[in-house]
Length: 169
Image 1: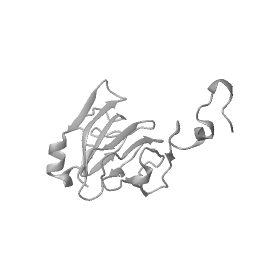
Image 2: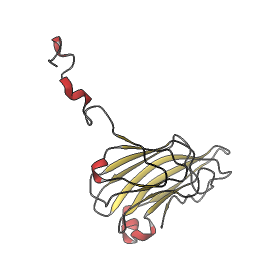
Image 3: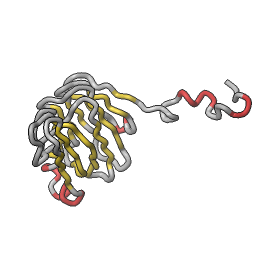
Image 4: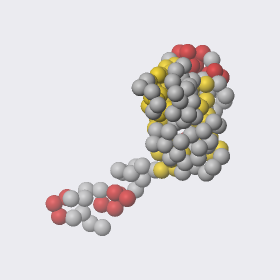
């Protein structure tokens, strides 16, 4: 298709190509799903209450956004590859009490003992976790060891405290 008059569509047919104004949406199957480095930049729509996402080995620049389609239950996880870890801040707000709490792990702490910080656990009705439908977690790999995680989650727990989403597997 040629460019219309006055340049209304300067992308021509490229406007329909992934990466030009569109986001690749991954919908993992139930159970454990592995995402690849080629999926970087994708939105992962996790519509499995106890689904597990396995990340590829850490390479600086990889990034994913995970959106929960339904409330999470025990067993819902995001896993780093062996030798990789998570750091960052996760905020959990309560639906039953006017309270929020957070977990924050710094980069140096996480890479010093990667096996202690290699799993993200989600359960919507816990006092130490969260993960309601519509919650979002962002993952950005900053180096060959660590994924920075950020997110604001909701919990149906009665008194969220001592948040423990970034854990050991």
